[in-house]
Length: 443
Ligand code: ASP
Image (cartoon, rainbow, N blue to C red; front, side):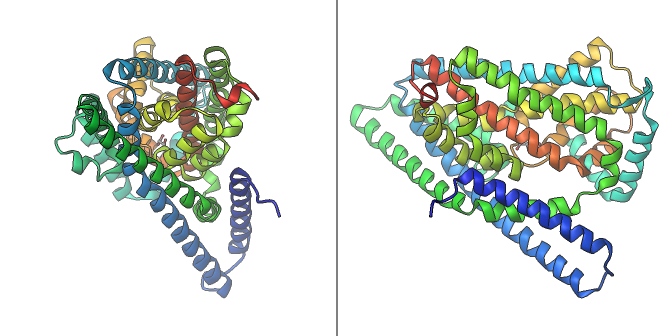
């Protein structure tokens, strides 16, 4: 019997888990709390959450060794600083360019659709819903969100500090601090190229082999993806409350529309005109990674699979992927940057704060800068949103962020897929500009 391809297995798991969650919800709606059927549902949810957690842990387990080995082996093979400098400039230009485009797209749509207004006035129904939701979440949650924002307030430049960790081993123990690990790996790799021939070859081959071994491990973890995705999605769909969704329909529409236009129009156009490849073929090659990003809402967790798809599916060399993708998973977040901009302006609309040109310009710049520092984990951008709201003088920022956090999952899943796709497009465009012939051209 022919095995289903990885992406089909993940889609099947996604659909099946959503369906099961809906069935559970309708059963739970008519059952008493202590009824045996409720015990069965609660037990099933706990088993799923456990399976999902194990899968996420397995993915996260791969991140640090994969980043270290791939960045070091990739850059050490670039023949010195010159090759790396060129690649670095192109990658940085792509990341800053596409993130800016995505923010401007979000800005355009949120100012056109104006989801926070009703008949041109701030939507008080949403404002009340924010308050109600925060009251339900409890003071503790609001306080912890406020504390997270307070800690980072005014610390826009913290990202540069993160680039140079005082202790690289301790940075490597925190999946949210990969920037420092990447910078260290780059410096270490450049140092390798300065060693005498024999030493250089030995250490380079060691890291190359270690990186290959990491990709084999990734394959093993991915074999469990259908079970992991089922376990991750079922509790999420089961727990998602419908009430706040109803009030936030226009907001959801704005965010999803902007994300989809960036994913399906802007980035494919860049692939076509700058990369001169078939965008559809690349999208197809990326299916497993995009579905995994969607299911896990973590671009760091998806990184091992992103690397496999871009190398094996799109045919980009390790030389390019090993640098662009780990860096992209850490600093390039088009979907997140877009979302930060839309969310901040939406909350300002709801709260009746008119952000003029200067105010909106600040939001754009802050979204660009903070998206670099946001970790590739679920809902990481909420702290950045709080930070921008506070610095823009929008009242009630904490309550709004707590409310948005409670309905964040679907938007998070979608923006993470956009984050991952943008990284993969950078790898393709940079590889083409370096003269590589890709599998995508033949399609
Ligand atoms: N979940 C996103 C990611 O991992 C980050 C965010 O926007 O919260 O890419």
